[in-house]
Image (cartoon, rainbow, N blue to C red; front, side, top):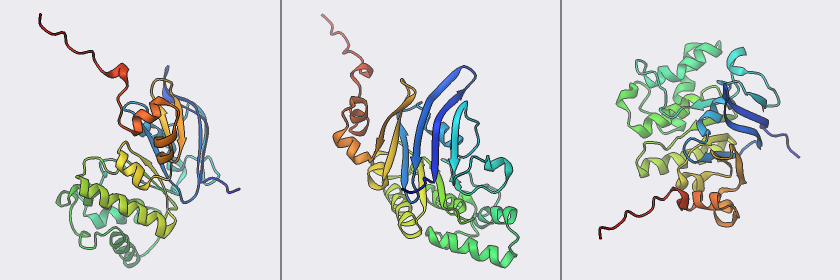
Length: 256
């Protein structure tokens, strides 16, 4: 049995007296494309903040690579992060955005840093974007640049927050294909927050589904299996785009 890359045990997250999720446990294996999903307001993006160390659990533990260290406080994290908006620095070129982490966390000379930047941009299909500002890129190109930046320190794990959000259908499919190719070619582990069903079914290997009402994980496993075979009507409804009857307003009365 392999040791999981991420191990979450008894996680409770929230603030003050508000609890978003309680006593949640799950594992992510090396090489997985793991999706965190659920309806609006269930805590998907909040969970990502806990996983990358931006928030402290109210209870429970999060282990990455076998340690519970808060990497963002003690030093170089062993993972990369792509935030929903891309979060590229607008006053810096794409190349400078990528080089920033290398300048901060390594002692590499400028020539080596430039070579790594060009290699990562080539890996995501942005060979000609090194000297461009983020404002000169399309939405899909910004997402690719953000993924390249997340990979610049050679992590074995990256976190993606709503990677397809705001993209047209073609750009979304191209981004899915890029994520899948990086996973296959490099063995890169991907943890992704999304509600885009096409992306989930196209590239997701395993998932957990959060539920706002019960504040718990109500499903886990292969998203395609859950779509076709789950016995929970909430899970089937989500994966098959079937609204809950409780959320459908009654028809307006007709005039006499």
